[in-house]
Length: 480
Image (cartoon, rainbow, N blue to C red; front, top):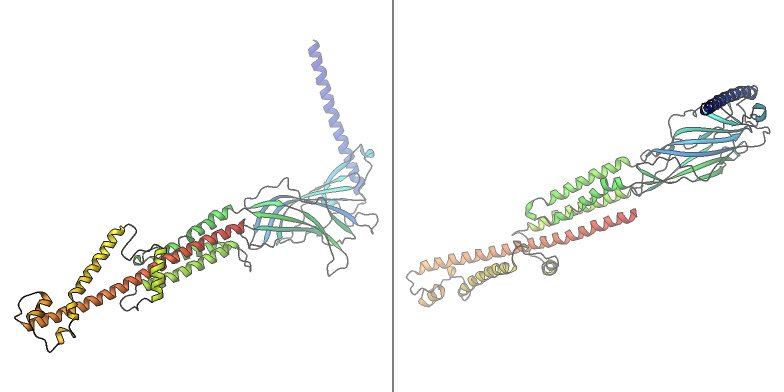
């Protein structure tokens, strides 16, 4: 019984408390209606709410950055979602809260009270929309707090000199459009914008939002005009551009020097250089489409241009070296300085083998082949020494006499029955010897020019490899 009676007592107490709260709310609603009628019966929102017109009305401004929606580098426009808080004191909207059952604040539509004409000076939107008509909080001492959301499009000078490793600073400048500093004095609530509710952007990293109050005198007017400038300090997240623009460019650039390593007879040396040049042109166009048409060239654009210039030079050098490789019988002999510098020294530095040899051919076999060929040619020369003892070739001598001694010198045969046949044979041998010497000279000259071309290929290959490496290191150093 005691437990049931205790529960009944508690339920009765709760019901009475709820009824009291409802009665209090009804009473507050009644006093709020009465307060609203008393405040706005003779109120006008057209004039500044100050008792002394010579005094300035202080307006406190605070900006909360919620999100960076877009940074348009090409049109140089920053789109941001912000919350704007303005607070000021209205001298004609005060009351004694004791007379209204302790009611200390009410919420009313903002268009019913005077509002400062604070606008974004560097607005870049085509549509000039009215401020959002949200409610204001009115306190008993006349303080009005107006919170309104806004999506702003502001002009932002974008410097793409170090793209994609750049930092940008975009300003949001707020001030009164018609009131000067003697009428409305704008004050920043804090030294920085509020970033506690900021939503991170996938492309830009927010590093700060300092606020600075400025007082400027324009040429049109002698009165000062205060404004508050919030500076958004942004750093670009470069990972996307590194993996999609920079690394492919570096990899393609390292293909260009390999064109010098291709054999000249493959026919693909020039094709490789042109293909690499076209690939870099595509990447360059991708970067140019997103950048503003300004005098400052992005860092990655400079890298592309330098690489394309290098590839163009390598392709031109490849064409020149191909012409040297294809020098034949009509070519001039190799100059002595080129023979000493290129064939004697540079070929050893760059480990260039003779034409027809490669790194898989044993050196002993190569030497044996070379020595055998020279030995055969020397033997053939020794066989012709007998003709050198004669003043003139046998085919044009008029005092030619066929005897056993000359016959023994020539072919070791013990008899000579037909001197006419022997004279014809000597003429044929002389023709074959001259042809062989001529072909040997032409072949050796062509082989030497091919070796010169091969040495130059290796030399320029390493030169361009070093250039690509240094340019890659340079762009990374600029980024750091």
